[in-house]
Each structure stands twice: as structure tokens, then as C-alpha cells.
Length: 161
Image (cartoon, helix red, strand yellow):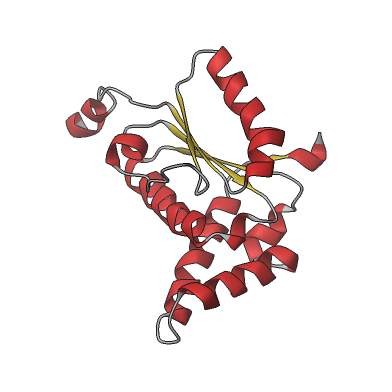
């Protein structure tokens, strides 16, 4: 118990990491989410592949954060970068028992959870483009596990608001 309680005393670099794919979602939703979180005093890190210098979530960014918000959209599964990072987020959540909040923007949670519909088609196409034939089954399984695990968390579905 001593070790677990001392881990909460580590200084935080970012309190909230926001993971998403696409400039359109950044302008429509993520910028407003970031502004609202910043307005109440949270330090945020916008984590997406379209940045000028995209970096993978590393220990200083993710491991020292409290919350990861993953914004799922129809285009999220078109990014192998996002899918790889989601695996890191899930590993981080399981290791450090930190909070993960999925947000569903113009997509159904079941499409993410089960990789169905257009989201599922894009997921399969991205996997075929990313992995060699020998790696395909294992790679898709890892991504699918991460998507299902993330979608099983209580989240925010914008279609309900």
C-alpha cells in the first residue's frame, strides 16, 4: 500500500490528454473541449497525428497524467497512429488505474466496440495497409482489444445531447 499511495504524489505534467484524429474534429469539438477544460484550470495536451510534430504518448505525457479523453469519430479508425496510441492509453490505464473517458462524436459506441459499419470498414482497411500479411491477425487483434476495452468504459455520446 505504501507504494501505491506514494505514486499519487508524482507531479503532473498534464492533467488531461486528448487523443483524436482529424483537423475537422479539432475545429468542431476538440478546441471547445480544450478551452472548457483550460477555463476550469486543467492542463491539457492535445494528442493527434496531424500535429506539426506528432509524438507518441510517452511517460512524461501519459504516465504522469490523470485522465485520457479519446474522441472517437468516423475517421478515428483511419489512423494507424491513433490505433497504436490507443493501445498505449489502454496499457497506461491498466497499469496506473487512471481514468479513460471515451467520447463518441457522430458515431455510435457499438460501432467502436464491435468495429462495425463505416468505422469497421476503415479499421480493416487501415490494418491491411499497416500490417504485413504475417502480422495482420495479431495486429488487428491488439487494435480490436484496445477499441473494445475503451468502448466498454462509461463515456459521453454526443448524440444523446
